[in-house]
Image (cartoon, rainbow over all chains, first blue to last red):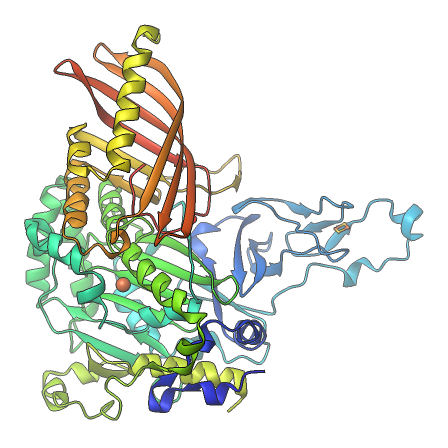
Length: 450
Length: 167
Ligand code: FES
Ligand SMILES: [Fe+2]
């Protein structure tokens, strides 16, 4: 078995590539990471009614997220207690019960086994139905609509797990002050031939890659007047949430817009192309936001890419009234393959024309067929091609950017004076690998107990 | 209006020529086959056990939903030579079949269905296949045909790779 402590040395910025290719490490992750962390399993807006359900994965385990007749959300293994068949076969839907197609055991939406064919003849009425319900994930909790589940009953409460990340979710993703979000129907799914952690760590702060990896997109965006208008012009930060000793989440980019007024003006210009309904929405949204955030010392309006340990990412190209937020999960399918799931969240109260425009913009960027994500995919394919070679395994990957300057960046005093460091988490430079080092430190801690 | 069957050879020729342009990476010529008001849509696919009470979604997430302006931007992106996922260019081979003129929604327009199988190879050995069906609307322009609407329905609910090619 690989000695994780030797292969992952985040404190010195060295990670051996074997942790991205080794099957044994993957199995340890299934046991030690995906059973002990809060994992995102879906959004409440997609399962509003009794019997509504969706399927997702917790690690390699497929689970059913279902709303019971008592309106509670429960999460079950999608696995019959008799011989392990699946009991739910659709990506989502509405059901009164789940019936196994092998021998016909039936479970209700609260997981109880209520139907056993030939109960008297075959089992002589001896089978204990009460203890053969669907296996239930013990911990389920929501944060403002985002549903998380965890196998470990001793896990810290979800609020503590998210910690300061809640501030950034509130300000940059969830926006309850303007009516909150809904997840629109449909999700993108595509395969990437690489290790899931490389995708997570890319979202957990790799702002360094964008000028090179996405050079072609930025080059043509710059030719478009509209795209130029959308470019954030303020300060860029990376925030290491949970630093130095909590759960490592990251806002890997706060691309600030200068002021509410300037942002409003930009959004109004874009909204005019969409019609009067869109213009009204923009005005109304800024009005609500301004009222709500009036007392805040810093106006946080920013585009972001972010990451919640272990495998949930979010992205929005810019802040504003016309933006969708991408919600992305990196599902591990073995050490060398990842199934990417991506949803789109929009402002629930926005008019249809705004929702559609926001989604179209998201699709054209960080998206399965967009102008951004496929270039990431290509780079990961190239580096993963190299993982199998002997000599590659002898060279650790380098994660030393900003090492030793985590709290003492040359611009620290300037940020403090401007009030930026009043935001929660460790505020740092746009380009840094502090969040990635944090990510692997926590990952190694889960695998080794150290 | 019923399907004008005599146009079958012309329609097939249009679709095969389009496939040839895409296979040969002649994207600017491909753009010329699209009308300025084209809508190019590639929806996502999920299997849904439906609730009879559930309303049809107001909006939904696709893979692509673009007009000419964005499609042209994509071609310019390829032309930068920095679109890494197409450097070197993918080798592709498009097989277009089951071409069916469905009907003629207007005097100068045809609804056409076709199936496709696209082989994509990167770096000599990473192989992917996309299978699907298309619902196209063609418009007669200056004696020839142009594409004014395309819906690409990929058969695979989970795409084999991120998409960097046109269907
Ligand atoms: S496996 Fe489910 S009823 Fe036998
Ligand atoms: Fe990227």
